[in-house]
Length: 402
Ligand code: CA
Image (cartoon, rainbow, N blue to C red):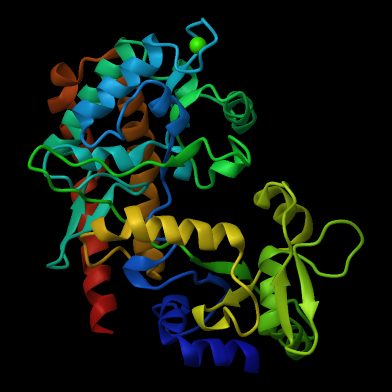
């Protein structure tokens, strides 16, 4: 598979993440690079978007601390920033525990600022794995959200809403602040919503909690033992790792009927993004890309493809507001665990992860975190948190040795 081999030669870490503990490769990956290390588009998946038109209408600054944010949300609720004479504003909305649509980035404004991410796990600069959903900072954040909820500052639908409902309210510009990957998919093409600046905690420090293993998945293609044409199949799939093909598989077509993502510059053998003409990028990509096994490396931009406008736009904003505050040197890589460890982790997470979300949502909407906190900590241990951390730590240490 010469194309895939070239990818591995350029970036050996992907071969490492793909190789099982027994030394074999069993599946073929999806790889998407957009920026490197701490300055990658995948550094953080949950970002906020704040209604700057409303801030301006009320003469308010961008909030700098959790306290400022509370005052801003309160003003959004009470002072009719959309000027229609009705109290129809939704100060804060999100979709609970739904990747980029969750409000997780706000957790870093509390306590020691380590914050939270989808796996409730960060890596400190000594290489120690830390759990995030059992800390005083986590508790403090939830108490703050409970106060906001009690005072009607949080959308009551945040804990159960469908994407279509989230988008419908967004299209009506009902939100003061909300969370998603790309606001164009929710509040449309206008520029009323701007990137939310990460909040400082009480000591003035700002941190953005890194998202773990994002931008790589190892499970996009397998060949079974029933396959009679192993070599031919491998040759075919290798074509998906040819740079121009990977780019199309990830984002979309050129030269097809209807709207395309690209046009082909034949002289330079390069795909050039076409203007979106108001179409939401995610919609057009979903219609015209196939996904699957592919690899796009940083070195491809300018050589085989232009960077998508929305990615360039996002990276420029992240460079201004996010990257300077990404303090941790590590995140947790996509490690290939042994079958035994995979099973243990899956067993623990089956109970523990749902419980964490359930309690978080209950505490935000109904309160009682002080009364229930000790039982919660006990319950996490009963589900196997210590063993979970031990497995994660051992694998991280081995990964860095190997
Ligand atoms: Ca209003």
